[in-house]
Image 1: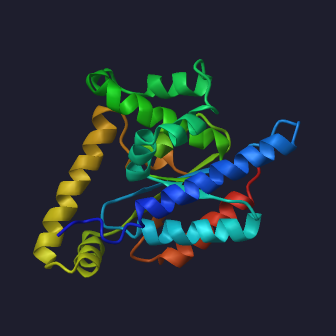
Image 2: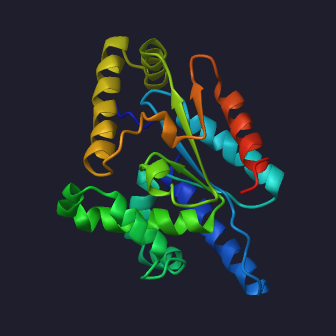
Length: 236
């Protein structure tokens, strides 16, 4: 059974991203002053934690409180954006060829990533462009590492006990707990290998984050409201 049944539709999120870009263009056309930096929020989680339900609620809270459009992106959205030339160009227009941030991002990658240059360069470019615009939630993608150079970025991590993650996966995917445990370990190894091999970092390192949440003790609603309060109450 696929392990992405509880992930929001990519088409819906692409539609949100298109609306986000339209509004950003409208604002830029009406204002001559340099726009104030808007927050970029990264969410990292151990596989099996309730990241997507929390992020969806967080987005709703942020839009309600700020009155602005917020967009949520992950690997599936970035890959879809890269395949849609017009939308991709609109996003990359915000990122100059000599962007200091992009140079810093590329310096983050380990030399081993160069064998996957054609894949990771456009991914990094899109993440960087969206992060610089702000009002964006970045799920996974090594977001806390890639965007750490941005002063307006905030980084959060969700962790949990194996018991919690296994039962959550089994319930959400309607699979046996034994299968859920194997899936959890397999997918976590993939994530850990990515940050270790290509970002030369350990995303379990607490120093990468502003706040960390124990999913055993914190429900998605608690995490979402805590992050919103922290970000909107912390000028940078």
